[in-house]
Length: 200
Image (cartoon, rainbow, N blue to C red; front, side, top):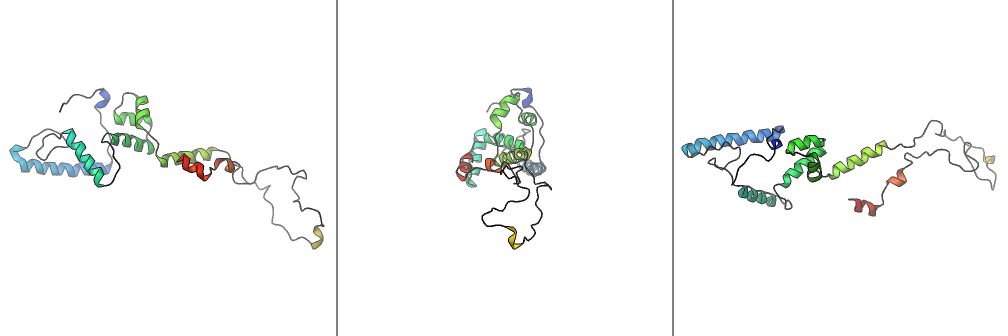
């Protein structure tokens, strides 16, 4: 194993942890304190949070091996340990963190490299963005002027044979003056079932 300082100043940083993670780390510290007492003089003080039972440093290869065992036990597809970093960036982005915050969280010197490499779009986020965009598109709304009153019963001789029944406020030339559907864009915004499967 080889240890050195971080490649950039951004590599040495403090990050915020959620309360569940903090509680897990407190339980881990309590177990480590117990191990330290049990091993007495044989305990190796490295100052690390994660160590072997006797305090010695963990070898990266053993950490990777254990990670593989864990994802196989719970039936996840093959994933590299480093991919958890990508996942953290994607989840942070989906939770509303901006790219600058994510850059600082990951310790990247360049926001461009971080954005291109570490963030991807979750399906749920993709759908939320689509819905937000749709809300910005103007929609035709029914107005009080074009809502027709309830029709009154007409006498039997109101219609003449061979003559079509036309509403009073209709244009005799058949020109549509206003669209009364809830969305003038609906036919153009909906995808056919085949297109939906391709989009997924």
